[in-house]
Length: 184
Image 1 (cartoon, one colour):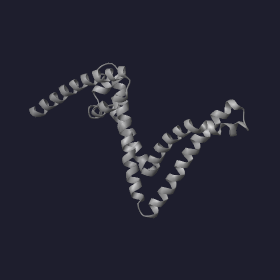
Image 2 (cartoon, rainbow, N blue to C red):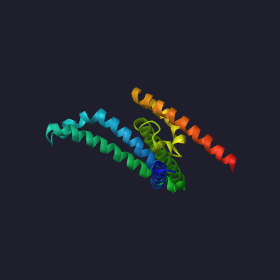
Image 3 (spheres, rainbow, N blue to C red):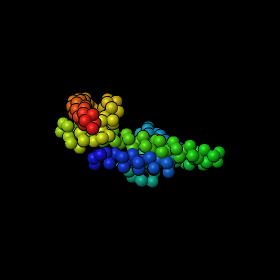
Image 4 (tube, one colour):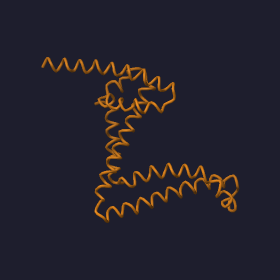
């Protein structure tokens, strides 16, 4: 294991533990709340700007209106998640919330690892030692093939070329390790 592997495992472990403490309901509510808050603030902040403009200068009224909608939706998501979590505990399903939160948290940590490896593979020189010597990178690179579809075309091509080179390097490493195992 190298430093990259340690960072990825550390972040994944932290996110898993954090997910257990927060629970599935709160983890999902924060993601949904963030997306919904962004959408609703973009869509409806202009409708409350005239009300806010009565109390502040118009230039600031739009920004304050946007923040009010955004923070209001986030607060609503938090309150709903708190009510749902208390209900789950009441009906003795709090353990399921904790377990689901841990699973989602661990998945978020692994997604962080995938994105980190994707960025390092794309931007560092070909077969960079930090990625090439990683024990986790070969496994997470398979997931990155799907994630790379979201990249701009130029970055997608860089990732594809460099990950292909890394795959060939790793095949050579594995073949060498198998030969060493046969000799023993």
